[in-house]
Image (cartoon, rainbow, N blue to C red; front, side, top):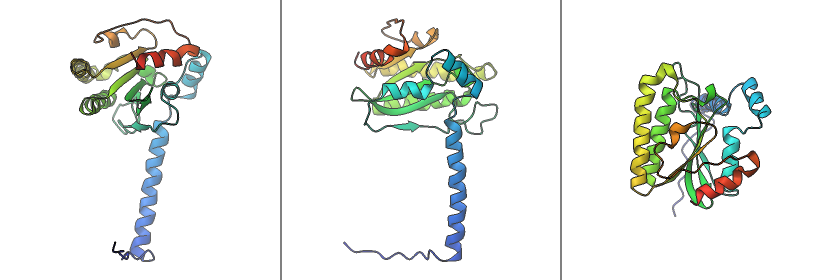
Length: 215
């Protein structure tokens, strides 16, 4: 194989200027990623801890297979969205393995605006639906949501109608969706072809998750 010699002069003024500019952009990007990891303010997190409940990413960590690759998708969805709920919206979406099955996992961030769905989050969920359908991926929803953000309801309800429709279409094609509801978000179960109700504690969450992923 012929080895190509680089022609870039790393000591040139233009290269150094570009490097400095790129590092500034990367620093800004990393700050946005850090912002997207915040699952609410300190008071909301404390209230959740007092109630002995798990945060969205903690639920996902319990669910996914250890020592298997995974990646968070769309962490910056909704960034700088006017009147939105911040980077990532109010869901965390992860592509990973559950019981050796590649899945999309969608967890509501209940500690950010009670998990209410703003416009950007509804678009994020539509994109999730598209990815699931095109790649025939099982979807697991970890539901703990206050419903639609009312100021956005005219747009959110339209998008969520499509979201539920796509869920039903995937079911018809044999692509399953599992929704684990933490609380009383019964509207998530209206499109389910099969429903089972459990009264579960934190200790048995992993067992229920494993059961769901193989059912």
